[in-house]
Amino acid sequence: MVAGLVTFPIYTRLFSLSDYGLLGLISTTVFFVMALGKMGIQNAIIRFYEEVKSTTKGISLPSFYSTLTFGPIVVVAVVSALYAVTIILIKSHLSDHHAVYFILSAGMLFFLCSNTILKNFLRAEQETGLYNVLGVIAKYSSLLLGVGLVYYVFESLAGIYVANIVVEAGVFIYLLRRLYTKNGIALSSFNMKFYKESLSYGFPLVGTEFTSIVLNAGARYVILFYMNTTAVGLYSAGYDLSMNVVESLIFPLSFAVTPLYMKIYAQKGKAETSVFLSNCLRYFLMAALPCVIGFNYLGRDITILLASQKFAEAYKVIPYVTWGVLFFGLGNIFNAGLLIEKKSHFLTLWTVVAGVINIALNFALIPIMGFVGSALAALLSYLFLFLILARKSFIYLPFTIDYKSILTSAAYSCAMVFVISFIHYDRIFVSILIKMLTGFFVYAGLLLAFDSVVREKALHFISKKEAPHEPD
Image 1 (cartoon, rainbow, N blue to C red):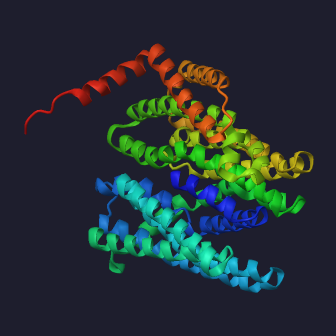
Image 2: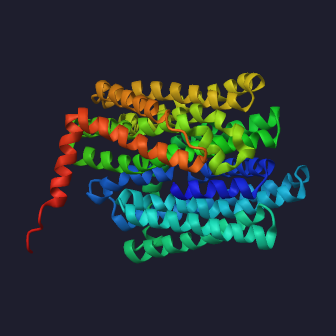
Image 3: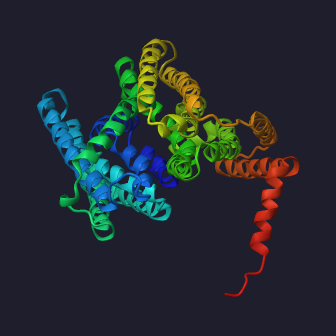
């Protein structure tokens, strides 16, 4: 996610508002096709891994890995080919440059989609280190190679897509080799019955993923319909910046918490899982609320610093997007009951409903509010989806919500913003840095001073670090 923040200011300075908007539109299109190509199999990997590992599923680990490797790759290859053919068929309706970008994105689609599926084996195994290493290497390699190709070879967006194809192809080869050497994948171990079961679990969630993309980025098409690619560029810049910041919090939660509570549920049952989810919510919001509230306060300055003055108006979408994405991210905790009980059709149904509401709100609000209307539509849709799914999920797996802790964290966050509002420096970078550092110490100080649980945990952590190690 930090790599995403590094990429953002480079791309906003490298491309015009219009080109940045086009980049966002193509990315959104690729994500839509990826949702179809994955067929929800990535969710089945997480759902069934612990059962297979504990031998309660009646299928061996090599068969598990082989089935959920070869089956999805064939589907992704077919979907990518159909996507490329579709682009070729509608080529006459696109400019020559735009057609080239879309065709290149088809090649990127195959490797990116395949890697997204295969890396879920690392999530299931809780191989966080390797997952992060691969992600960071891919992100920075794509950035460096892409910028080089844009400057010295293509002088256009084509350099970005060629770089992504090369890098993601390398990651794909590595992941396949690892699966072969460590897990013994082989076509002979493919289990059609288990593949069908995985599809029956995962495929209903394709609708959820489709609609999530509509909620996340589909509004760019509606903005283009009413306005132009420049407006799309402004919206994309504000949205991308907000996503990079908030997902820095949500991404670790969403990728770590699901396999963890699946493991706890399989080994210890509902009661322990409820306690775990309650603690996750408390500590997640304790970290997220000051970040979101502080980012909203500093949003305009951060936008100008990272994206340059030409994207200054993009900051207007930040308050709506950050809170909307936070509600969406909380679904990783609140939807646990639905996922554990395999009620994926509830997720699909209500996510689709939220997507329809989002599209309707976009058509209603953009003519009135411009691209800011899309951000408001996203917030309202996310909030609706969060409330509906949380209520449904609690039927199957309720857990305690510590409202006092949430309100206290919110109050401390507001106090933090009040303090840093008195800090003013002419240089924008220095001003942001000092405000962030001051805000951190103010919030941390309030927590340690008035939250006895946090204080005890901090003291326990320090005492463990300072304790001498026993000899082996």
